[in-house]
Amino acid sequence: MINLGFQRISVVSEGLNFKSLAEIPEKEDTPVIVYVGRLKRAKRPDHAIKALAVVKQEVRRQSYGFWVVVHSERVGKTCWEGVRFFGHLGNEERRGLIGRSWF
Image 1 (tube, rainbow, N blue to C red):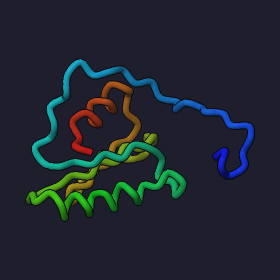
Image 2: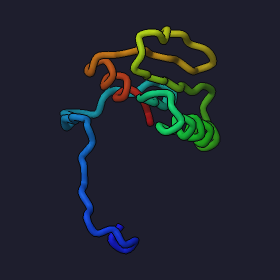
Image 3: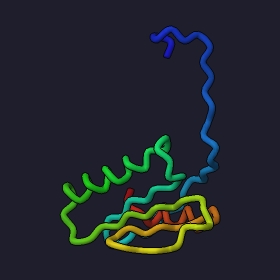
């Protein structure tokens, strides 16, 4: 940013609190990508969908999963063709899903 002419630069850390893992969680049997966030263009959920296409091409498996965790009570836990939506989850449950995912 300095090379672009900015002079006053501040680094703001992420608003998340992560603890180091004591051990690697057990993963799902099939490749799963998890997206956590709002379904807004600025959050780029389309990048997660594109990543799934790359995984399907590079990792030769029969089935794949795509989990979408959104901060909404209105989202049902509906599942179709490997896509599963989760509504608002507590920290531990959300971290558990992330831990079980491959990406």
